[in-house]
Amino acid sequence: MRRYQYLLGDAKREAARLRAQASLWDPVSCALFDRVGIKRGWRVLEIGPGQGSLHLELRRRAGGPVDAVERSPVFTSQLERITRKDGFGRGQVWQTDLVDAPLPRATYDLIFARWVFLFLPNPDAHIRKLVRALKPGGLLAIQDYHRDTFALVPRPPEWFDFVLADRAFFASQGGDVSIGSRLPDLYRAAGLTLADIEVTIKTGRPGSPVWNWLTTYFIGVMDRYAAFAPFTPAQARHLRRYWLAASKSRTSRLIAPALLDVVGRKPR
Ligand SMILES: C[S@@+](CC[C@H](N)C(=O)[O-])C[C@H]1O[C@@H](n2cnc3c(N)ncnc32)[C@H](O)[C@@H]1O
Image 1 (cartoon, rainbow, N blue to C red):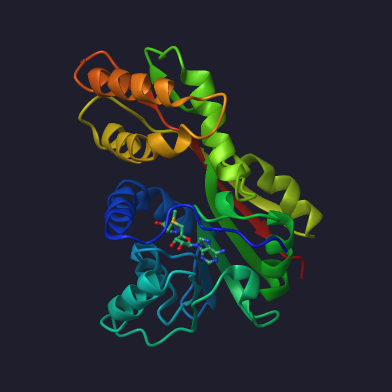
Image 2: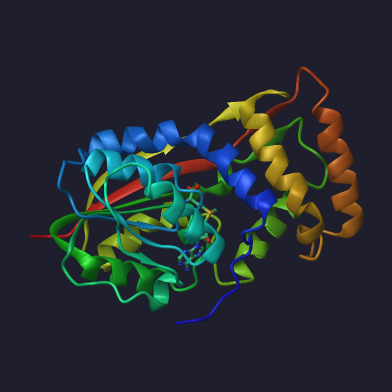
């Protein structure tokens, strides 16, 4: 499988961004966990837990340790620190890229990943690897974006070039920023039966948590996106000014990328 550079890293600022993002989105993931019906005693694996808020939630629901694959040594240490305190025991943590994790076969009742698959090259091979690790009857639940709903209102003149740069940024490492809407076909090709799909689209006005969440990420990466033609550094400068001015107008709105929850079941 193709090697890749993880685009967002594990610096303190990214860790803080992940925590703020999690506080906005964890209720959507908890609603998914409710629908999945996690039972005490389930064997659960999380891919890319990041700052670990959902990892703690999965442990609480399973009533025991949960395994994890997390490439960042910084995030892995943080995960080990926070899981020491809740009394649910020590899960297996593979500090490696998923592609290299020696996952056991036919072991898990649930494998969960939020905002990991959009970064991965060869998502088909990664999904087949996870399917092998599921028990017969086990569930794969992935939450990821279908980016195409994303909009700033009123629309800036360089918006479409910016959207292409967003796509190209993830594609530069083999990822797909709209992987969410491809997951159903990828699941079927890997032998899973589609069990559930849910779509969440958040919108926000200036000053709202949704506005602040999207603005923090996109203003933060704007200069990196400027390297992806047809978007240019001059367009990036203009869009940043436009966006920050829009942040002061009571009639601006952001429509977020749609988040898709896609659940598949391995046949018994
Ligand atoms: C955008 S963050 C999302 C974190 C967390 N899932 C959440 O929802 O807040 C992506 C996470 O996946 C991890 N990651 C990225 N690529 C990975 C890979 N190939 N294998 C394992 N972990 C990976 C990153 O280190 C990071 O913790």
